[in-house]
Image (cartoon, rainbow, N blue to C red; front, side):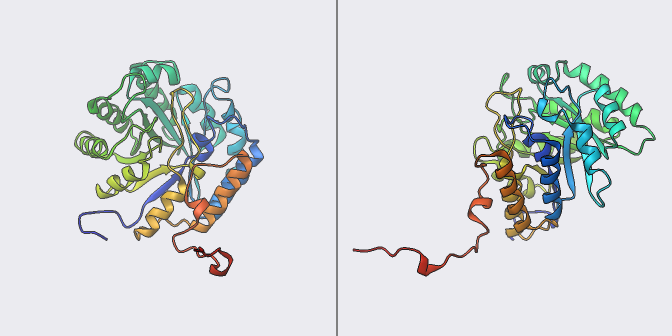
Length: 316
C-alpha cells in the first residue's frame, strides 16, 4: 500500500440498507422480505446493522414494522442491531423492542432538522438528554448521527463548528460512536479532511463513522480520504439503495458490495465475503423489482473471467 495512505488494517462496515436503503423506496417490503435480506447479509459476514427507525409510521411508512422486524431477528448470535430514534418516544419504543443500540439523530442545519423531525436543533438536543437518562442501566448503547454534515440542500454550506458542537453534545451524553451523514451527497475529500480534523480537536473521545451517499459519483473517493485519515468505521447500503424523503435530490448510499470490494483490493480486512454480498445484492434487486445502482454486483470481482470462445471476434 502507498506509504502516504495511513489506512487501518481492519474496517467496520455497518449495513444501513434495511433502514436508510428502504425508507425512501416506493416499493414497501414485507417484514418477511426484509428479514430474508438481512439474513442473506448475515450469511455474507455482516455483523452490524442499522436495522430500522422508530419514527412515526405516517412520516416513513416503509419503516412502520420496526418492532416486528426487531422481534423477527432478535437473538442472532454475534450480530449488533441499532435503530435510529428522533426523540424520547422513539427511544421508548426501541427499548421495548429489544434493540442493541439507539442512534439519536439530528441535522447540522436548522432547515433540514425542521423538515426531518419537525424540531429545532436545540429542541432535538434537549430531548436527547431525556433519552440518555432513559437508557441508563438498560445495557442499550447510545450512539449519535448528524445529518447534512457536509452541506444542506436548503442552506448550502454547513459550518464545521455546528457539526463539532453537536458531536461534543453527543460525547457529553456518553456516546462513543457518532456518524457524520452526507445526506444529499455533498461531501468532497477536502470537506472530509476538515470535518474529521475538527471533530478530533473538539471531541477526541468520539470514534467517527462516515456515511456517504453517491449522489455525485464520488462516494468511494470520500471513503479513500477517510481511510487516509485513519477512519475505520463506514456505513453503506446493499445495492446502493437509499435516500432521504425529506431532502430533494437525495439518492442512494455508497453500495456495500462496492465498498467491500474496494477495501478487499486494498488489503483491508472487513470479515465480509464479497461473493456473499453480491448474492445479497442480487436478492435486493429481485425484491425491489428494478436494477440497483451498485457496480460490483453487476460486473463481478476484478478477476471475473469470461469464456473467450463464446465472445465474437472482430472482423475486417
